[in-house]
Image (cartoon, rainbow, N blue to C red):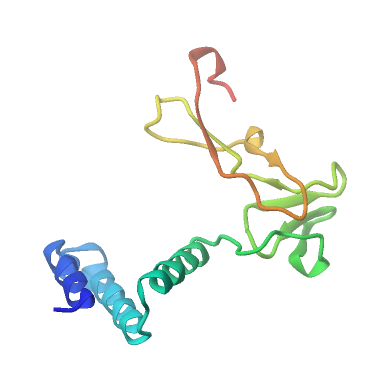
Length: 147
């Protein structure tokens, strides 16, 4: 039994091909198709991990190289406000600063971490060339709950 066969069996055990699963079994079929392509490419242990890591970053919308000041990486969405064409949650407001910011820099919870929200306070600036910082999750204390 190949690794792909084992993985397809795992999909079956998890019920991902069942008509009552998410998307009526289509998720199981989609993952099976990806596994078959992956197997066909003939990856070894290291190349499999490297390929999967890069693929995962790309499907999450993460860049593989730093954002830059190159004008082709930015589109004006409002007068003076530019959005990254590479990462949708990154902006530069030329009227305020030349530094880009992520609108997902901080996520706040006012219910002890059950759910999170963002606000204007979620903006975190960073330097170019560079990557936006990872989201910081903040559980608010009672006196902070009007962020």
